[in-house]
Image (cartoon, rainbow, N blue to C red; front, side):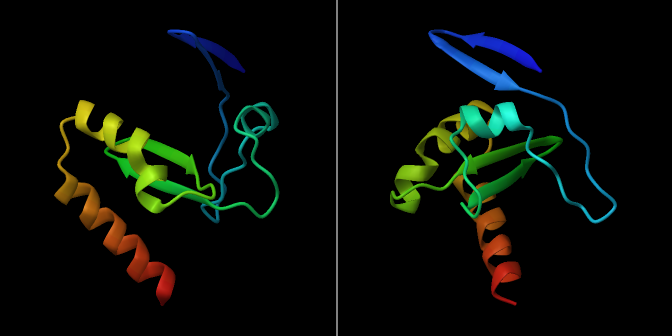
Length: 95
């Protein structure tokens, strides 16, 4: 478990492993810090070797994505790059 300090925020971080089935357990301290409950949906985004998990709350998709877009811009990726990832994820989830 790691405690990181980003400005005024304290960030919870832990290591975990990917199972043979591609499953990942989100450590309890991270679930608690993010207020993740059983059955809630999260958005998973891969940017090169970085994986971002974002809790989907009762907001519009655009509102949910605002902090993610900010980070994406810092990484130099375009909205088109991320749009392509999102469309691919939607296609996979509907099949």
